[in-house]
Image (cartoon, rainbow, N blue to C red; front, side, top):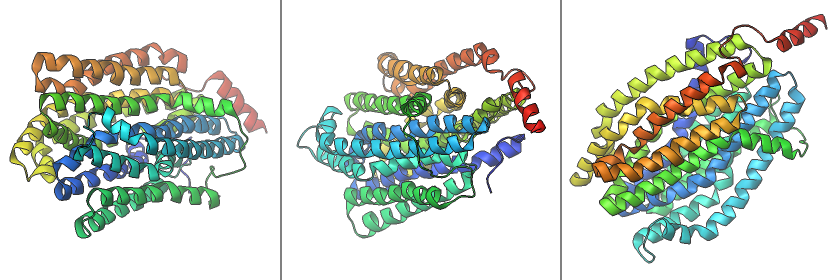
Length: 463
């Protein structure tokens, strides 16, 4: 049974509604985390550094799925809120087809350009690191169309009122990846190719099962129908979700810049330490991202219905939840820095010490990360892709890039680890300014229904 997005959500109900989406994001992160664990412990730190070097390039391509999913969900949910389900289904079907088509093109291009990409990212041609990075990146291209679909369906399952189904799909994909990593890498000893193959199969499950579900299931208000090719719909969805794509691309570019700086200051150990931090930080950021993605369709629905009371309620409840979660995440980051790092690099005492020290500094960003992510998703939900993209652009391509370049000049290695915290802190100031300035335009500081919504409700009751 689909969840009724028009109802009032208490704080506990809001948390319960978003938990499956949060879990989806966490299990999606497991692909990289599990790969990192097995690659590090069975193939060594050079292979680990190679995966960390090439993975940002892979994620730049996969970010298309996040763009189509979040932007498309905002558009589809708004259409549902306006009461036009047939049109919402056509939009949904068109966007899924578009996502798979784009993913196929990117997969082919990525395969042919992976070797020069590894060189551009800093791997020396002919080195073992260059070979490993190229191999892993090319194998990731095999399942890229389904990886993009998996990202898109994470949002569409929420919009369909079926977040638990989305969670179950990701659990199936994540468990398959974990078990196959153990089998291919730990038992068969296939090393890096085995880890990549396990991820391929997990992504095929994560992107393929939803195709079957929405093709056959009719108990939800979203399912596949014959779409109409409407380029404005595709354009609007991409514009809405551009901030999420900008965020993912920019995070990948920042990751590339981190690797450059770390190779310059420390060498391969720095890249390996950063990779370990990013593996575990993925879990923390997945909680914030999952909550933001999970609540966005609710905000889009109420925006379409012009229910200012519920918009106001959703916003303030979300800010409170994120505030508490941010403090908890920071404390956990300090407490778990050593045991989490030891999971990946306990075999190298010097590398472990470097990773733990860096982790405790990096964890300061958890105090600001949640609000920065939510603010961008909030404006995506309101179908304001421009403001959402601007927040994301400033957060990563301006503030974080500037910080990772300037801070090492002032504080050395510590400046690199503090760069994300500075970038997210400045982003929070910008995002808060936008939220205050645009509150009157979208009505989330008001109470009640808009006049247009009241007239629509009266007409519906008379009919």
